[in-house]
Length: 439
View 1 (spheres, one colour):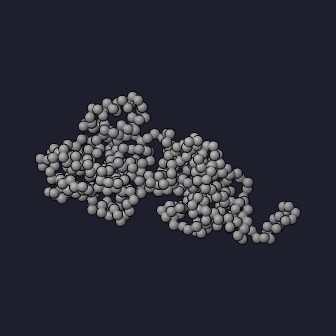
View 2 (cartoon, helix red, strand yellow):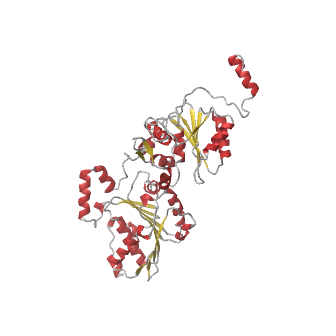
Protein backbone atom coordinates (compact mmCIF):
# COMPACT_ATOMS: atom_id res chain seq x y z
CA UNK A 1 0.00 0.00 0.00
CA UNK A 2 2.94 2.28 0.73
CA UNK A 3 4.10 2.09 -2.86
CA UNK A 4 0.64 2.79 -4.26
CA UNK A 5 0.58 6.15 -2.45
CA UNK A 6 3.80 7.23 -4.13
CA UNK A 7 2.07 7.32 -7.51
CA UNK A 8 0.35 10.65 -8.07
CA UNK A 9 -2.09 11.08 -10.95
CA UNK A 10 -2.67 14.60 -12.31
CA UNK A 11 -6.25 15.79 -11.78
CA UNK A 12 -7.29 15.73 -15.49
CA UNK A 13 -6.44 12.01 -15.61
CA UNK A 14 -8.25 10.90 -12.45
CA UNK A 15 -11.14 9.43 -14.52
CA UNK A 16 -8.66 6.78 -15.66
CA UNK A 17 -8.78 5.21 -12.19
CA UNK A 18 -12.02 6.58 -10.76
CA UNK A 19 -14.68 6.30 -13.47
CA UNK A 20 -16.02 3.16 -15.11
CA UNK A 21 -16.32 3.61 -18.87
CA UNK A 22 -15.82 1.31 -21.84
CA UNK A 23 -13.77 3.94 -23.69
CA UNK A 24 -11.50 6.51 -22.05
CA UNK A 25 -10.28 8.88 -24.75
CA UNK A 26 -7.63 11.48 -23.94
CA UNK A 27 -6.16 13.80 -26.57
CA UNK A 28 -4.25 17.05 -26.72
CA UNK A 29 -0.92 18.60 -27.55
CA UNK A 30 2.66 18.23 -26.42
CA UNK A 31 3.36 18.51 -22.70
CA UNK A 32 -0.06 17.30 -21.58
CA UNK A 33 1.51 14.31 -19.83
CA UNK A 34 -0.76 11.68 -21.38
CA UNK A 35 1.86 8.93 -21.67
CA UNK A 36 3.17 9.37 -18.12
CA UNK A 37 -0.34 9.54 -16.68
CA UNK A 38 -1.49 6.43 -18.53
CA UNK A 39 1.61 4.49 -17.46
CA UNK A 40 1.27 5.56 -13.82
CA UNK A 41 -2.46 4.82 -13.71
CA UNK A 42 -1.97 1.34 -15.16
CA UNK A 43 0.81 0.58 -12.68
CA UNK A 44 -1.39 1.77 -9.83
CA UNK A 45 -4.27 -0.46 -10.92
CA UNK A 46 -1.89 -3.33 -11.57
CA UNK A 47 -0.69 -3.13 -7.96
CA UNK A 48 -4.21 -3.38 -6.58
CA UNK A 49 -5.43 -6.46 -8.45
CA UNK A 50 -4.45 -9.00 -11.05
CA UNK A 51 -4.95 -7.52 -14.53
CA UNK A 52 -4.01 -8.39 -18.09
CA UNK A 53 -3.03 -5.12 -19.76
CA UNK A 54 -2.26 -4.80 -23.47
CA UNK A 55 -0.32 -1.83 -24.82
CA UNK A 56 -0.96 -1.63 -28.56
CA UNK A 57 -0.07 0.63 -31.44
CA UNK A 58 -0.49 0.50 -35.21
CA UNK A 59 3.12 -0.41 -36.02
CA UNK A 60 5.50 -2.21 -33.66
CA UNK A 61 8.52 -3.60 -35.44
CA UNK A 62 10.24 -4.32 -32.11
CA UNK A 63 9.64 -3.85 -28.38
CA UNK A 64 11.62 -0.60 -28.65
CA UNK A 65 8.69 0.90 -30.57
CA UNK A 66 6.32 0.36 -27.62
CA UNK A 67 5.83 1.99 -24.19
CA UNK A 68 7.74 -0.92 -22.61
CA UNK A 69 10.66 1.39 -21.85
CA UNK A 70 8.40 4.08 -20.38
CA UNK A 71 6.72 1.59 -18.03
CA UNK A 72 10.10 0.19 -17.01
CA UNK A 73 11.36 3.71 -16.23
CA UNK A 74 8.27 4.48 -14.12
CA UNK A 75 8.67 1.20 -12.25
CA UNK A 76 12.24 2.19 -11.45
CA UNK A 77 11.23 5.75 -10.54
CA UNK A 78 8.69 4.55 -7.97
CA UNK A 79 10.78 1.59 -6.81
CA UNK A 80 8.06 -0.94 -7.56
CA UNK A 81 10.01 -4.13 -6.87
CA UNK A 82 6.95 -6.33 -7.39
CA UNK A 83 7.26 -5.84 -11.14
CA UNK A 84 9.65 -7.99 -13.10
CA UNK A 85 10.61 -6.26 -16.36
CA UNK A 86 11.23 -8.91 -18.99
CA UNK A 87 12.39 -8.46 -22.56
CA UNK A 88 8.90 -8.54 -24.13
CA UNK A 89 6.51 -8.30 -21.15
CA UNK A 90 6.22 -6.96 -17.61
CA UNK A 91 4.94 -9.14 -14.74
CA UNK A 92 3.86 -8.44 -11.18
CA UNK A 93 5.30 -11.38 -9.22
CA UNK A 94 2.98 -10.78 -6.26
CA UNK A 95 -0.49 -10.72 -7.84
CA UNK A 96 0.11 -11.84 -11.43
CA UNK A 97 -0.63 -8.58 -13.27
CA UNK A 98 0.84 -8.83 -16.78
CA UNK A 99 1.65 -6.19 -19.43
CA UNK A 100 1.90 -7.32 -23.06
CA UNK A 101 2.83 -5.28 -26.15
CA UNK A 102 1.52 -5.64 -29.70
CA UNK A 103 1.44 -3.93 -33.09
CA UNK A 104 -1.89 -4.03 -34.93
CA UNK A 105 -0.71 -3.66 -38.53
CA UNK A 106 -1.28 -6.81 -40.57
CA UNK A 107 -3.05 -8.50 -37.64
CA UNK A 108 -6.17 -10.48 -38.46
CA UNK A 109 -8.93 -11.76 -36.18
CA UNK A 110 -7.07 -15.03 -35.57
CA UNK A 111 -3.72 -13.49 -34.67
CA UNK A 112 -5.26 -11.01 -32.25
CA UNK A 113 -7.27 -13.60 -30.29
CA UNK A 114 -4.68 -13.46 -27.52
CA UNK A 115 -6.28 -10.17 -26.46
CA UNK A 116 -9.70 -11.68 -25.73
CA UNK A 117 -9.04 -11.92 -21.98
CA UNK A 118 -7.56 -8.44 -21.64
CA UNK A 119 -8.86 -6.18 -18.86
CA UNK A 120 -7.45 -2.90 -20.19
CA UNK A 121 -6.08 -1.98 -23.61
CA UNK A 122 -3.97 1.13 -23.97
CA UNK A 123 -3.95 2.34 -27.58
CA UNK A 124 -0.91 4.60 -27.80
CA UNK A 125 -0.34 7.12 -30.60
CA UNK A 126 -3.93 6.45 -31.58
CA UNK A 127 -3.84 9.04 -34.36
CA UNK A 128 -2.02 6.41 -36.45
CA UNK A 129 -4.58 3.64 -35.91
CA UNK A 130 -6.37 2.68 -39.12
CA UNK A 131 -10.08 2.01 -39.27
CA UNK A 132 -9.35 -1.58 -40.25
CA UNK A 133 -7.24 -2.13 -37.13
CA UNK A 134 -9.96 -0.67 -34.92
CA UNK A 135 -12.63 -2.87 -36.50
CA UNK A 136 -10.53 -5.94 -35.67
CA UNK A 137 -9.51 -4.83 -32.16
CA UNK A 138 -12.79 -3.50 -30.77
CA UNK A 139 -14.87 -6.71 -30.86
CA UNK A 140 -11.89 -8.72 -29.59
CA UNK A 141 -11.86 -6.82 -26.27
CA UNK A 142 -14.98 -8.56 -25.00
CA UNK A 143 -14.33 -9.42 -21.35
CA UNK A 144 -17.02 -8.09 -19.00
CA UNK A 145 -15.88 -4.76 -17.54
CA UNK A 146 -12.96 -4.41 -19.94
CA UNK A 147 -11.83 -0.92 -20.90
CA UNK A 148 -10.09 0.67 -23.87
CA UNK A 149 -7.81 3.60 -23.07
CA UNK A 150 -6.86 5.89 -25.95
CA UNK A 151 -4.14 8.54 -26.01
CA UNK A 152 -3.53 10.61 -29.10
CA UNK A 153 -2.21 13.84 -30.54
CA UNK A 154 -4.62 14.59 -33.37
CA UNK A 155 -3.09 14.76 -36.82
CA UNK A 156 -5.97 15.29 -39.23
CA UNK A 157 -9.64 16.18 -39.12
CA UNK A 158 -10.58 12.66 -40.18
CA UNK A 159 -8.30 10.60 -37.91
CA UNK A 160 -10.21 7.27 -37.86
CA UNK A 161 -10.55 6.91 -34.07
CA UNK A 162 -11.49 10.56 -33.66
CA UNK A 163 -14.28 10.17 -36.22
CA UNK A 164 -15.37 6.83 -34.74
CA UNK A 165 -15.23 7.73 -31.04
CA UNK A 166 -14.01 11.19 -30.13
CA UNK A 167 -16.14 13.45 -32.29
CA UNK A 168 -19.51 12.16 -31.06
CA UNK A 169 -19.02 10.12 -27.86
CA UNK A 170 -21.83 7.94 -26.55
CA UNK A 171 -22.72 7.32 -22.90
CA UNK A 172 -20.02 4.63 -22.60
CA UNK A 173 -17.23 6.91 -23.83
CA UNK A 174 -15.34 9.51 -21.78
CA UNK A 175 -13.46 12.13 -23.81
CA UNK A 176 -11.02 14.61 -22.29
CA UNK A 177 -8.67 17.13 -23.88
CA UNK A 178 -5.49 17.79 -21.90
CA UNK A 179 -2.82 20.32 -22.85
CA UNK A 180 0.40 21.50 -21.25
CA UNK A 181 -1.35 24.16 -19.16
CA UNK A 182 -3.63 21.47 -17.67
CA UNK A 183 -0.66 19.37 -16.55
CA UNK A 184 0.69 20.39 -13.11
CA UNK A 185 3.85 18.38 -13.79
CA UNK A 186 4.70 20.12 -17.09
CA UNK A 187 8.29 21.43 -16.92
CA UNK A 188 8.81 25.18 -17.22
CA UNK A 189 11.09 24.60 -20.20
CA UNK A 190 8.21 23.07 -22.17
CA UNK A 191 5.95 25.98 -21.25
CA UNK A 192 8.57 28.41 -22.60
CA UNK A 193 8.84 26.41 -25.82
CA UNK A 194 5.07 26.57 -26.24
CA UNK A 195 4.99 30.34 -25.83
CA UNK A 196 7.90 30.77 -28.28
CA UNK A 197 6.05 28.64 -30.84
CA UNK A 198 2.88 30.69 -30.36
CA UNK A 199 4.74 33.90 -31.17
CA UNK A 200 6.36 32.44 -34.29
CA UNK A 201 3.40 30.57 -35.81
CA UNK A 202 -0.08 30.40 -34.38
CA UNK A 203 -1.04 27.50 -36.69
CA UNK A 204 1.98 25.43 -35.58
CA UNK A 205 1.21 26.29 -31.95
CA UNK A 206 -2.41 25.16 -32.25
CA UNK A 207 -1.41 21.84 -33.74
CA UNK A 208 1.67 21.04 -31.65
CA UNK A 209 0.67 22.47 -28.28
CA UNK A 210 -3.14 22.76 -28.35
CA UNK A 211 -3.78 19.39 -29.98
CA UNK A 212 -5.74 20.76 -32.94
CA UNK A 213 -5.65 18.77 -36.20
CA UNK A 214 -3.43 19.96 -39.01
CA UNK A 215 -5.05 22.76 -40.94
CA UNK A 216 -6.10 21.86 -44.46
CA UNK A 217 -3.36 23.32 -46.55
CA UNK A 218 -0.43 22.63 -48.78
CA UNK A 219 -0.29 18.86 -48.28
CA UNK A 220 -3.99 18.06 -48.80
CA UNK A 221 -5.64 17.92 -52.22
CA UNK A 222 -9.23 18.38 -51.02
CA UNK A 223 -10.32 20.51 -48.07
CA UNK A 224 -12.46 18.45 -45.70
CA UNK A 225 -14.73 21.44 -45.07
CA UNK A 226 -15.64 21.53 -48.76
CA UNK A 227 -16.65 17.88 -48.57
CA UNK A 228 -18.79 18.49 -45.48
CA UNK A 229 -20.53 21.40 -47.19
CA UNK A 230 -21.17 19.31 -50.31
CA UNK A 231 -22.86 16.64 -48.19
CA UNK A 232 -25.59 19.04 -47.09
CA UNK A 233 -28.76 18.62 -49.21
CA UNK A 234 -29.30 21.56 -51.56
CA UNK A 235 -30.07 20.28 -55.09
CA UNK A 236 -33.38 18.52 -55.76
CA UNK A 237 -32.66 17.35 -59.30
CA UNK A 238 -30.49 17.92 -62.35
CA UNK A 239 -31.11 17.72 -66.08
CA UNK A 240 -27.42 17.43 -66.92
CA UNK A 241 -26.24 14.32 -68.80
CA UNK A 242 -25.87 11.21 -66.65
CA UNK A 243 -22.28 10.03 -66.29
CA UNK A 244 -21.32 6.79 -64.54
CA UNK A 245 -17.85 6.07 -63.16
CA UNK A 246 -16.97 2.40 -62.69
CA UNK A 247 -14.00 1.54 -60.47
CA UNK A 248 -13.43 -2.21 -60.72
CA UNK A 249 -12.01 -4.03 -57.68
CA UNK A 250 -8.33 -4.90 -58.07
CA UNK A 251 -7.86 -7.10 -55.01
CA UNK A 252 -9.93 -9.33 -52.75
CA UNK A 253 -10.63 -6.68 -50.10
CA UNK A 254 -11.39 -3.88 -52.57
CA UNK A 255 -14.87 -2.99 -53.79
CA UNK A 256 -16.32 -2.48 -57.25
CA UNK A 257 -18.12 0.86 -57.23
CA UNK A 258 -20.50 2.58 -59.66
CA UNK A 259 -20.84 6.36 -59.19
CA UNK A 260 -23.81 8.19 -60.76
CA UNK A 261 -23.42 11.94 -61.40
CA UNK A 262 -25.45 14.56 -63.22
CA UNK A 263 -23.54 17.82 -63.35
CA UNK A 264 -23.45 19.38 -59.88
CA UNK A 265 -25.43 16.51 -58.33
CA UNK A 266 -23.78 13.21 -57.40
CA UNK A 267 -26.82 11.00 -57.17
CA UNK A 268 -25.58 7.78 -55.60
CA UNK A 269 -22.97 5.05 -55.31
CA UNK A 270 -23.57 1.34 -55.77
CA UNK A 271 -20.94 -0.87 -54.10
CA UNK A 272 -20.31 -4.57 -54.76
CA UNK A 273 -17.89 -7.11 -53.31
CA UNK A 274 -16.57 -10.40 -54.67
CA UNK A 275 -17.72 -9.97 -58.29
CA UNK A 276 -15.74 -11.36 -61.23
CA UNK A 277 -15.36 -9.56 -64.56
CA UNK A 278 -18.40 -11.15 -66.18
CA UNK A 279 -20.60 -10.34 -63.19
CA UNK A 280 -19.40 -6.72 -63.16
CA UNK A 281 -19.97 -6.48 -66.92
CA UNK A 282 -23.51 -7.81 -66.42
CA UNK A 283 -24.16 -5.16 -63.77
CA UNK A 284 -22.81 -2.46 -66.09
CA UNK A 285 -24.94 -3.76 -68.97
CA UNK A 286 -28.08 -3.58 -66.83
CA UNK A 287 -27.27 -0.03 -65.79
CA UNK A 288 -26.67 1.12 -69.34
CA UNK A 289 -29.97 -0.37 -70.46
CA UNK A 290 -31.87 0.99 -67.46
CA UNK A 291 -30.42 4.49 -67.03
CA UNK A 292 -29.10 5.30 -70.56
CA UNK A 293 -25.99 7.23 -69.40
CA UNK A 294 -24.28 9.55 -71.85
CA UNK A 295 -20.98 7.97 -70.85
CA UNK A 296 -19.70 5.22 -68.58
CA UNK A 297 -16.02 5.60 -67.74
CA UNK A 298 -14.36 2.33 -66.71
CA UNK A 299 -11.03 2.01 -64.92
CA UNK A 300 -8.94 -0.28 -67.15
CA UNK A 301 -5.67 0.01 -65.24
CA UNK A 302 -6.12 -3.40 -63.58
CA UNK A 303 -8.70 -6.14 -63.99
CA UNK A 304 -11.16 -3.53 -65.24
CA UNK A 305 -9.68 -3.96 -68.70
CA UNK A 306 -11.51 -7.27 -68.96
CA UNK A 307 -14.82 -5.66 -68.04
CA UNK A 308 -14.25 -2.97 -70.67
CA UNK A 309 -13.53 -5.58 -73.36
CA UNK A 310 -16.74 -7.46 -72.57
CA UNK A 311 -18.81 -4.27 -72.78
CA UNK A 312 -17.20 -3.34 -76.11
CA UNK A 313 -17.96 -6.80 -77.44
CA UNK A 314 -21.58 -6.34 -76.40
CA UNK A 315 -21.89 -3.28 -78.60
CA UNK A 316 -21.61 -0.46 -76.06
CA UNK A 317 -18.60 1.25 -77.64
CA UNK A 318 -20.50 4.54 -77.98
CA UNK A 319 -21.30 4.60 -74.28
CA UNK A 320 -18.30 3.02 -72.58
CA UNK A 321 -14.88 4.66 -72.42
CA UNK A 322 -11.80 3.03 -70.86
CA UNK A 323 -9.63 5.15 -68.57
CA UNK A 324 -6.22 4.28 -67.11
CA UNK A 325 -5.43 6.19 -63.92
CA UNK A 326 -1.71 5.86 -64.56
CA UNK A 327 -1.77 7.05 -68.18
CA UNK A 328 -0.69 10.43 -69.51
CA UNK A 329 -2.92 13.31 -68.47
CA UNK A 330 -4.96 15.24 -71.04
CA UNK A 331 -3.30 18.38 -69.69
CA UNK A 332 0.21 16.95 -69.50
CA UNK A 333 1.75 20.30 -68.56
CA UNK A 334 -0.23 20.51 -65.32
CA UNK A 335 -0.75 16.91 -64.17
CA UNK A 336 1.62 13.96 -63.82
CA UNK A 337 -1.09 11.45 -64.81
CA UNK A 338 -4.82 10.98 -65.34
CA UNK A 339 -5.37 10.12 -61.68
CA UNK A 340 -4.09 13.49 -60.48
CA UNK A 341 -6.03 15.23 -63.24
CA UNK A 342 -9.38 13.58 -62.44
CA UNK A 343 -9.02 13.99 -58.67
CA UNK A 344 -8.18 17.67 -59.13
CA UNK A 345 -11.38 17.99 -61.16
CA UNK A 346 -13.24 16.80 -58.05
CA UNK A 347 -11.50 19.51 -56.01
CA UNK A 348 -12.50 22.17 -58.55
CA UNK A 349 -16.06 20.80 -58.72
CA UNK A 350 -16.36 21.13 -54.94
CA UNK A 351 -15.65 24.86 -55.25
CA UNK A 352 -19.12 25.20 -56.80
CA UNK A 353 -22.49 24.59 -55.13
CA UNK A 354 -22.60 20.82 -55.52
CA UNK A 355 -24.10 17.89 -53.64
CA UNK A 356 -22.66 14.56 -52.55
CA UNK A 357 -24.42 11.70 -50.77
CA UNK A 358 -23.84 11.89 -47.01
CA UNK A 359 -21.43 9.05 -46.39
CA UNK A 360 -18.61 9.01 -43.83
CA UNK A 361 -16.64 6.49 -45.86
CA UNK A 362 -16.73 8.79 -48.86
CA UNK A 363 -15.77 11.73 -46.65
CA UNK A 364 -12.71 9.87 -45.35
CA UNK A 365 -11.62 8.89 -48.86
CA UNK A 366 -11.94 12.38 -50.35
CA UNK A 367 -10.32 14.21 -47.43
CA UNK A 368 -7.35 11.92 -46.87
CA UNK A 369 -5.32 12.23 -50.07
CA UNK A 370 -2.04 14.13 -49.93
CA UNK A 371 -0.56 15.94 -52.90
CA UNK A 372 2.86 17.04 -54.08
CA UNK A 373 4.52 18.27 -57.26
CA UNK A 374 7.08 16.60 -59.49
CA UNK A 375 10.27 18.17 -60.86
CA UNK A 376 8.23 19.78 -63.67
CA UNK A 377 5.82 21.37 -61.21
CA UNK A 378 2.97 19.00 -62.14
CA UNK A 379 0.44 17.81 -59.59
CA UNK A 380 0.95 14.25 -58.34
CA UNK A 381 -0.94 12.33 -55.64
CA UNK A 382 0.48 10.01 -53.00
CA UNK A 383 0.51 6.34 -53.88
CA UNK A 384 -2.68 4.33 -53.47
CA UNK A 385 -0.94 1.79 -51.25
CA UNK A 386 0.15 4.51 -48.83
CA UNK A 387 -3.42 5.81 -48.62
CA UNK A 388 -4.71 2.28 -48.08
CA UNK A 389 -2.19 1.74 -45.27
CA UNK A 390 -3.37 4.89 -43.48
CA UNK A 391 -7.09 4.64 -44.22
CA UNK A 392 -7.39 0.88 -43.89
CA UNK A 393 -8.99 0.41 -47.32
CA UNK A 394 -8.79 1.62 -50.92
CA UNK A 395 -10.42 4.85 -52.07
CA UNK A 396 -12.86 2.95 -54.28
CA UNK A 397 -15.83 5.32 -53.95
CA UNK A 398 -13.74 8.44 -54.50
CA UNK A 399 -12.00 6.85 -57.50
CA UNK A 400 -15.40 6.06 -59.03
CA UNK A 401 -16.38 9.72 -58.56
CA UNK A 402 -13.07 10.82 -60.12
CA UNK A 403 -13.82 8.70 -63.18
CA UNK A 404 -16.95 10.76 -63.88
CA UNK A 405 -14.58 13.66 -64.59
CA UNK A 406 -12.42 11.73 -67.07
CA UNK A 407 -13.62 13.80 -70.03
CA UNK A 408 -16.20 16.52 -70.67
CA UNK A 409 -19.62 15.01 -71.43
CA UNK A 410 -22.20 16.89 -73.48
CA UNK A 411 -25.87 16.08 -73.90
CA UNK A 412 -26.41 14.91 -77.50
CA UNK A 413 -29.57 13.01 -76.77
CA UNK A 414 -30.02 9.35 -75.85
CA UNK A 415 -27.37 7.15 -77.44
CA UNK A 416 -28.69 4.33 -79.63
CA UNK A 417 -27.42 0.97 -78.37
CA UNK A 418 -26.42 -1.12 -81.40
CA UNK A 419 -25.09 -4.67 -81.24
CA UNK A 420 -25.68 -7.73 -79.10
CA UNK A 421 -29.28 -7.98 -80.20
CA UNK A 422 -30.22 -4.52 -78.96
CA UNK A 423 -31.18 -3.42 -82.48
CA UNK A 424 -31.82 -5.86 -85.29
CA UNK A 425 -30.15 -5.62 -88.71
CA UNK A 426 -33.54 -4.83 -90.24
CA UNK A 427 -34.03 -1.93 -87.82
CA UNK A 428 -30.58 -0.58 -88.66
CA UNK A 429 -31.35 -0.60 -92.43
CA UNK A 430 -34.79 0.89 -91.83
CA UNK A 431 -33.28 3.69 -89.73
CA UNK A 432 -30.71 4.45 -92.42
CA UNK A 433 -33.41 4.42 -95.12
CA UNK A 434 -35.49 7.05 -93.31
CA UNK A 435 -32.57 9.26 -92.38
CA UNK A 436 -30.32 9.05 -95.42
CA UNK A 437 -32.44 7.52 -98.16
CA UNK A 438 -30.62 4.19 -97.98
CA UNK A 439 -27.73 2.33 -96.40
